[in-house]
Amino acid sequence: MRPLPLPFPDEHEAPHVTELRFAGSGVTVRGAFELNEFATLTPDNLEFLRLYIRVRGNLKEVERVLGVSYPTVRSRFDTLLRAIGYEPELADPQAEILSSLERGEITPDEAARKLRR
Image (cartoon, rainbow, N blue to C red):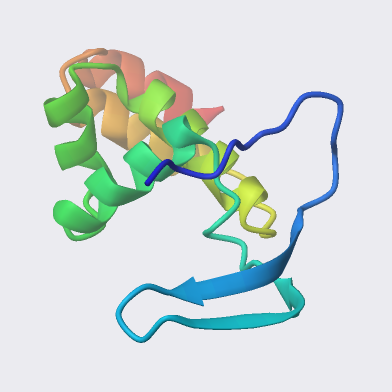
C-alpha cells in the first residue's frame, strides 16, 4: 500500500474518500467520507508529529533529536498546529529570553538587559 498522495498539486481542499475496502473480510463500503485533519498532513508534518509524540511533547527533546535550534522547532510546531486547524499562541518574549539564557545563547547580563526592556 502507498500513502495518500498529499498534498496534491493545484488542490487546496482536503480530499473526500469515496470507497473503503477491508481486505480481511472482502467488504467494500461506498459513500462520501471526510478525512480527519491528521490524515491530510504532509509527510514532513506527519514525521514531526510522530517525533513530538515519541518524546512526549517535549520540544527541547525534539530540538536535541533533530539537531536544530529551538526557534526552528517552534516554527515547525507552529506549522503543524496550523495544518490541523489551530492558530499557535504568540510566543512570550520573556520566556524566549529565559530559554535563550538556559541554552547558553546569551549571557545572564544580556538576559537581564532584555528583560528590563
